[in-house]
Length: 262
Figure 1 (cartoon, rainbow, N blue to C red):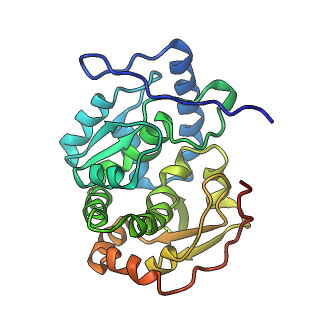
Figure 2: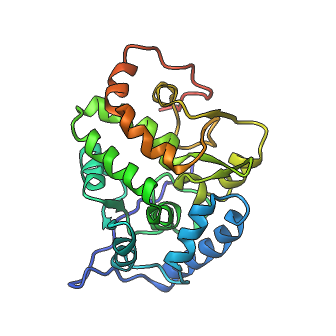
């Protein structure tokens, strides 16, 4: 088996900037060009508006540059973090309107997929929709609520986050479009999620999402669909923290995938 590459955050200089190599910038440029073409007809209109606003170039953006744009629109920013962080830190940053984002980028040998969220996934996949007020406010309030939960409940709340912010679909003009960052930064999932007949697509019921197991390293067998980004914002009034706690009293739905071998 090929040895998995280990990724590390890039140190920031005294101005808060990371310095990327030509290879890293070339990797970003390749991914950007490829993915912008793939999302044209498959992504939510609001996401595509956000891509235009952020106006990505052929070099990796500095987190501070993206923060400057977002802060003027929705008050959000981007916080450099290691690839994977603990739930407490993750939700704490959301509660402060800071999106946690790694600053390394995948190596060319792993151009199509890595398990770790890299800077392309974070900035291209997630940040465009942080220009949308209902979406951004859902993220903010969800982070605040999750901070009131214990670690076990936080992990359960991440399921709802997974099926919305990471792998959510939206119905626009009677067509299914993608808005989840995990979909929109993926070469294969952006096509599969909206066009394939294989996965199941359900209208979003938050309790169903909280009871649905997932794996991070496969094409998703189940997607949940919203009608508008106001639907996300309205979830807060339903108290997802309380729903997460109540979901432990019910059995999980059967997994639609094989368990990962350890």
